[in-house]
Image (tube, rainbow, N blue to C red):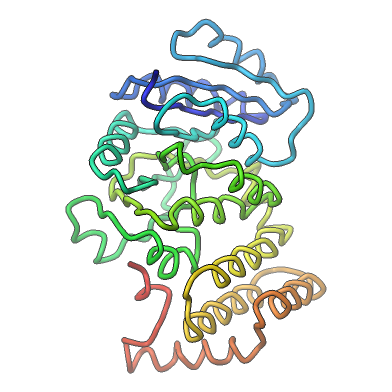
Length: 321
């Protein structure tokens, strides 16, 4: 039995697949199987995938006859087929450095109560050129560590995940298969954009998470990226409200932190280039699901103003573990 199952979900990424597969084959850790899943691509993905049909590391290739409509349904299918103790969802448009898998597996083997190991990333564009985008935002706490930290999952959700999905890319994670249960995928499968935020929140809860401060993942940000499309049409923000509601219902977030988070979210919506109708729709959802009003926004702005005088006041930056 392989120790790791690598799931490669693909949809119309034929041009990126050879680079992704090459990055997997070149991993220094070799005890793995590969499960290739195609979600009814309309490009020449099948032609590219068939080149790996007889590769000894490829244990399964599955082509959907119709598009599933959700990347999380593909995740669920792959995990259901996986044999490994650990899973790496290696998105077809991303890549990785050779020590990615060995680093994640070694730490998960060392810390048996950790469910997820998350590595940092460099961001590339459609042409594979490195950008200056910094999604990790590591500060003093992270840079002063020994290269990684093992953090309490429930605290991580309250102090980190409530503000944003700090586990922002599936390709940057290695996780224990036993915790990726069908009920998690079922709930996330109802979303198109923010389901991964909810999934990692549920995976971390009750366990521990390992943050690795090495940029071993390569995240491709391009025009067909699902997250970017969701940002443009507002669906990301609509689903973000649902994730915030889940966290508030299931974790002890506290009234002060809620108000600051709501206020910051309102500020983001006000500054985003959305129609007034869409903004109103999102604000109504916040009021119905979170009990949020414009008072939270005003409170957050006042808090931010006095933060320069009293640095101990709560902000996203100083709340992060």
